[in-house]
Image 1 (cartoon, rainbow, N blue to C red):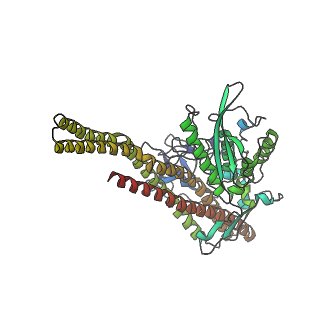
Image 2: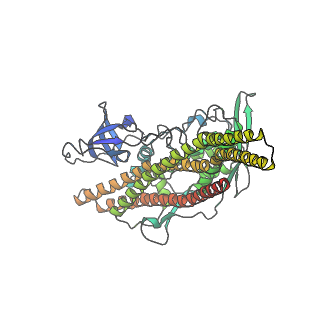
Image 3: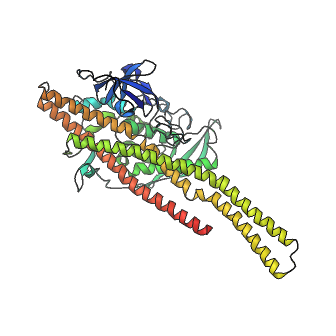
Length: 522
């Protein structure tokens, strides 16, 4: 592999202090080593900078130009772990502190407008988005937050897992990876986001929108601003490295108090909270419970906020709270399933993007050229009827004039129908696809974490075969890797479950509206 050229598929904002590269989509790298371990490769950029990058973030574009280098002892890039910033902009002592809801946050946006992890552009003006924060790579956080220590069994073991932190993976009827799922919630609930209201502080100098968040399991509304949703998102991303946290709606600097924008954001926030309620793990998470139930009390909010930000079961330590049966799958079967899911994600990403691109173009034509063309046709028939009306002296002639006039009006109405139709079919479909685009963009990093874990297992097995590692240690590594595999598979299966249910509803609604539209036209 040494000397092979690879193309970058996703932006990677690496930590240069630990030897990682910062690379962008479509950049070409020259591979120098593939035996670094943990799913990392070493390479050189076109500007001559040498460093590490995740294998899953690149694709091979040429044959190797040099024979592989001899295997050398694996050394994982590491540095003393420094906990991620505790979101200092949240650290003001007031419940309703002073930073703006749409500025100052580290979140880069969940809708496909601004991206921190974009796929290669294929000529369209529509871009997909990542749902992770700037300067935060899920894979790097996993490694630095104790993920490797957990796998190797060197993590701190003295902490007891409280009941509210325990997460269970179960095996349902069937065989293989598809049978590994999250334990269903014993008390499922939903949540609504209602009554957006513009408020202000500092005698009107600071304005914001507040929302009532009402979970159905308590029916007690709590007031939340966008910054509180953003805080929750950041805590969930830090805590659950192998769970695809749903994307938040985009931030907006101007026009954020407009009625249409506020209502659209309310709808998206309600859908976002709904995704958390649907998830068997996130719906029971203590931090989600704090967000949904903490009353508008500064003291209570601060206490729960500090507890969440000092969570001992975050990142790699989260897996210590997972209870699961052995997967009973070979490394080959696990690798095969992960690779297939990766192919599925890339294929679905491309398909979703194509529909969004084509649908957006169709909507523009409906509002523009289609409407204009039908109105022009209608105008010609209307003009003809007006010509007939100049000398309508017989009853038959008057009837013909009215019929031609009606034809013109019908074409005019069809033009208006084309202009209004996207609101009923394509725009709701595109909104749903954009949400899925944001969710899909998280999976390369999730799969990279799993690939690094399996790489560590293979490394230990080889050391055992060379009599350089005890069987007991290898068994420990394999058992802990099994937990990470179970979590990965459970999350993949949850995504498929959501996908089937959501796309069934989206496609039924879209096709019903399309059928009704063409029936009206005919």
